[in-house]
Structures are given as structure tokens and as C-alpha cells.
Amino acid sequence: MILYVWEFDGEKYKKSAVIDDATSVIWVRRFQTAGEFEIYIRATKELFTLFTQEELLITRHDIPESAMIPERTELTTNAENGDYLIISGRSAESILGRRVILGLTTYSGTVEGCIRYLVTRNLIAMTSSNPRAIKLLELAKEHNYPEKINKQVTGKNLLETISNICIAYQYGLKLSFTGEKFIMDIYKGIDRSLHQSENQRVIFSPEFENIGNTNYIYDRSTYYNSTTVAGEGEGSDRKVYTMYQDREHAKGIFLHEKWIDARNISSNTDDGEMTPEQYRDIMYQQAQEDLEQSKSTIEFSGEVLDTGMYQFGKDYGLGDTVSIVNQYGISGVATATEITEVEDENGYRITPTFSNWRID
Image (cartoon, rainbow, N blue to C red; front, side, top):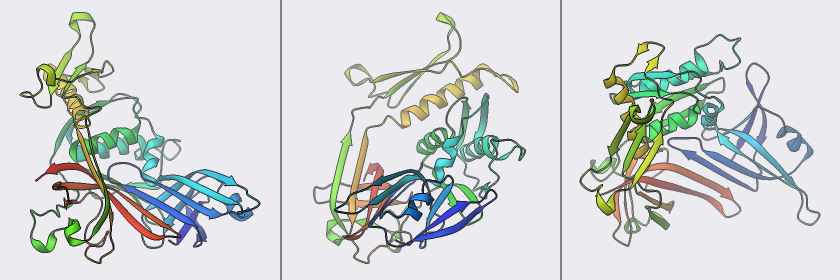
């Protein structure tokens, strides 16, 4: 991989160096939160000085909008094998994690509108003299997705909050770097499963010899199917709401409960007092988002073989739904939630992770 290093000069980022001789590069992109990277490269005084500065970006020549932010630099010296730098960090989406949602924020409307409101209120819509303002960040054009949400939040990390909403509603989060600024977009993946027409399908299977070593995980270790959210009030007057993931199944020995203390959710907002119905909707929304993350998880990852059949970025991308079939009869549709690209002395490899599995 050819990588470009950008330095911030106080006003904007400027391209300052090119890396084309790294021993290895690991580049991970994720659908609903920040990705990460690691570069292993022979050390020089110039590179060491460069990567111990603040506010750097790293982009790729082939995917310039995919930006990574160095957060850690490790120098190892070895008289026999030479000196090396290990540079690691997270993708541009991590910028959202630099903010906490201050004040009591209540929103009722579309999911997309809620996310845009949270970003605008905590990063964009403020005077340039405000230290919280990031003038290099803009929102992409709104897609007008129809899903609705009732949300109240305060004191939570902005990235974690937005990621949790994206997971609950199957949205993707992306911060693209244009060379001058960051553009934040909330988007949906494309259905490329067997349910689509033949020229739109993407199928990974040993039958097509396009997937190599695979790893399948079915995990119920943190599963629960009932969430009780306790809001404001004391004693018997406390407002408590319970939601079930599957009411018919969630009983007896099969009932797995979780308690959430949501005392910070208040019916007294900047816009006045909520009605009991409005407060109930906010609490049920909290329970629903939590239950979405508690499902039994099925993950299937595999090394995509370069047969020329499908090309990542052209035939499918992050957030897209594909069909997967393996030799054990595991068949279904899943979302490409993570893409790991590795380039080292063994060549180039790309490994997608498929989550949100649904059995066909």
C-alpha cells in the first residue's frame, strides 16, 4: 500500500510525506463505528519525529477518503534485526469519540435526523471561538430514511451513542476525508444476497472457490431477552418499564433479564414537561436499543480468495448484505460489518467479517 501522511498546519491538513516501504500494513474499516490500523516500518529519525507530533492523518492512494488518525507510536531498537516503528490508531470516525453529549438532549423524529442533530449540536452548530467546534466537519446530504426514534441522552460519549443507534437500526457511519475537510454520512448497505437478481448477487462459498479458511462463532454468553429500564422517581413511585425480545419464548427457564438504571432520563426537558406517553416512549426506546445488542450473536469470517469473481469496493462494500454458504451446511445472509486488509511479505489479503446473520 502507498500511504500519504498529512500534517495539520493550524488551519488545514497538508500532505507532507509518502510511505511506500512499510514492512506490513493492517487496515481495518468498520460499518458502524471506528476502524483501526497498524503500520510496521523500519525506523528513521525523520519518521520518528513525524509520528510523535499531534494531529496527523494517514490516507491511501487507492482509497483517499479512508483516513486514519495515528494515536500510538512505538519504537523498538535491535542491533541484530534493526530498528522499527509500530504506528497505530483509529479511523476518522474516532473524531466523534472526542465529544461528550453535554446537557439534556431529547429528540423525537427520524433516526437519521437524531444522529445529525447530535453531531450538529456537539460538533458543528456553535461559534468558531467555541473550543468544541470542528469547522473541518460537515454533514453529507440527508437521505430522508423513514425509521423513527424517541431518544433522550446526556453525559454519554458521542461516538458510542451514535454507534449504538446505528447497530439498532442497521445504519452505517462514515467520515470521509476530501483533502480539505471531513464529510459525515449515515447510510444503508445494499442487499446483494441470493434474493436479488443474478447480476446483483454476491455469494461466498467453497463451491465457487472464492472463500478460504473460515471461522464461525455462535455466542450466547451475554444473551438476555428482557430489559427492565428504571427511570426517574423513588421507591414505589419510580417509573419502571420492561420490554421483551420474544415474549412467547422469554419465560421460565428461558427468561434472561437485565436491569438498566436510567434515572438520568428526565421528563423535565428544556421544552417543558413530557407527557407520560412521551416519557414511556423514551424509556422503551432505551430498552429496545439495549435488546438489539443482546441477541445471540453469529459471526462468520473468512479469507476472500482473489478469483476475480467479486471485487471489494466494486461488487460489494461495507454494510452490504451478501449470501454465504460453507461446507457444513451453514447458509444464510449476513452484513459485511468489517473489512480487514493486510499487506506484508506474504502479499495482500482481504478478510471481511460478516455479522447480523440471518439464516435462509
